[in-house]
Image (tube, rainbow, N blue to C red; front, side, top):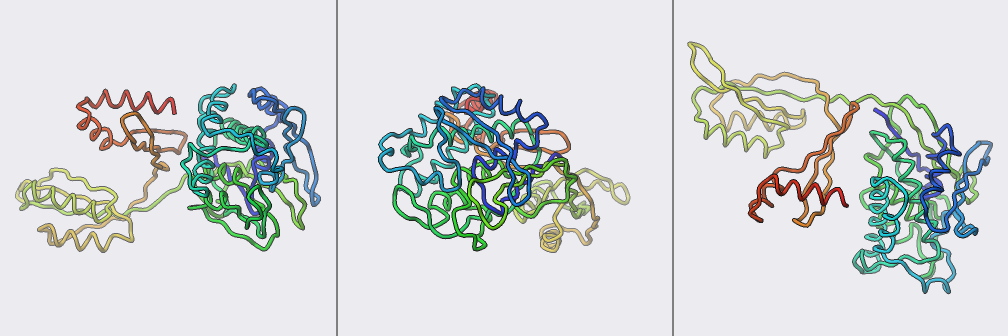
Length: 401
């Protein structure tokens, strides 16, 4: 499985992520050219070779109307107060992003990252995401960071994205609202649900943009997996520390995960279909992975039903007790099975008919998407529509999001 792993032991910022990703391409000048063709007003990308602590790395420099806005971890908080009278709303930024010369997937991902930031800012300031306004100073270079990250991720197209726990740094940071603790309030909000820490490095290591990019793309967090590494990228930050200040990314191949499951089966020749149906539902409630039944013939050609339950090892004892309690069986067969499964996730899609869950499965070189049937059926009943009519509307709205 094509896997990308982010080492965020020195935090992350948008420009650091971009520089790190660019190091995975043989023709980096060509990729920088693609970034410059996005059409972000006044923005130009400049990739520079640099060295820090004896390590050859890359640094991304972004200029807006010929001037560098000052990319470094504290950058998003250090603008002069007199510039704060010009703002852009989330809607303004989404309209800007959707007007850029980029694939639709890239633009949608960029909007998704900005929505994470807007929701965090809104929570901190007690506003709805749509009411959040981003300061004009720094907006274009922040858009540049997000669009660059989304473009390069689209080009690399990993099947699995993992990240280490994020180092936030410690101390305080100065911003328009005064001196605030690290991580900054918006960053802290974005970090919810993500593993993070500080290891006594003084200063802000993790920016809201960096945290939002990692949160949007990372499927899992943890130690670096066993992988056959093909390339390593070093994206330098602007600040100097006692150790290398960089986001490292590893691109390579990991083995598809094999898992184990316990198969429990019973033969039932003296239970009605209705009673078996009740047991079926009960087993699923108790956490069975799957339940299925097939008709069989037992001794003396007695017709019967073989009820089979797939369950994880930690749930086995509970399911065994349930089978003895809710069925007429006097014996249960057990087999230990290995299985190969696609990695699965569920995302919520907003449509004009309401929210619909979408199941996404990927791995082994395939990717499948399917809308949750119960959500589609509920809308069909509520709106007096057919399943096909609901699906057509949902697919149309999903493609536009």
